Amino acid sequence: MSFLTKARQFIDGHYKTPKGLIGTFIGEKMVKQHKTETDWSLELMDVQKGERLLELGCGAGYAIKLISEKDLAEEIVGLDISPTVIRSANIRNKRAIREKRVKLVQANLNNLPFQNEGFHKIFSIQTIYFWTEIDKTISEIYRVLKFEGVFVLTFSDGKKDEIWEGIRDIAENQVILHMRNAGFKDVSLMRGPDSRGYHTVAVRGTKK
Image: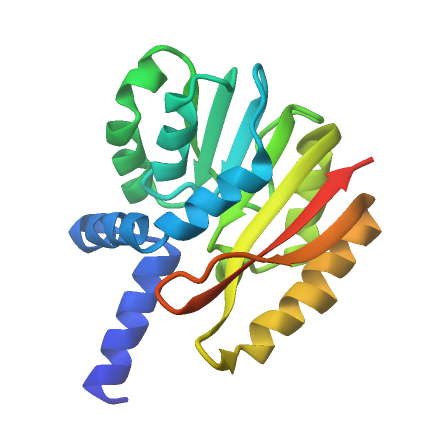
């Protein structure tokens, strides 16, 4: 295995589960890279006064901070598997955490540590590439989402003139399929603004 291949695997591993100083750097890098996707995702969510929100794969907590600054949500819970980025999210949202408006949890997407029907809206930005058991994760999302609650999953499915057929296939034949099987209604794939040349899309569905 070449040095470049090993280096790429090393970096890819830190994108999936950021660790240590390099993980902290990558967490902050993702904040800058994903601002366009984040802003669009929050528009799709249309947060209302008094709602409880859950972000899956919250990273360094940028989206959580944007939401908390609008002072609409009753509580925003951020979940990530990486203690490194949870630490960064704590620093970024320390005031809201102190005021009990934000809570951060280290956990796995396949077994969400929350009660049934606890959230009005759930969202996840640029994490689908790391989901290992899509059917189980979607089942868990459906379980913890309130009736008439909304789930938004934002990701990229290509760059410039290139379509990533593998990601498009996962979205159409796994994510959307499992969402409908779980009971989500009005499930749709939407195209958003390009970000750094990457095609931004989102799957959105409602629990009914």
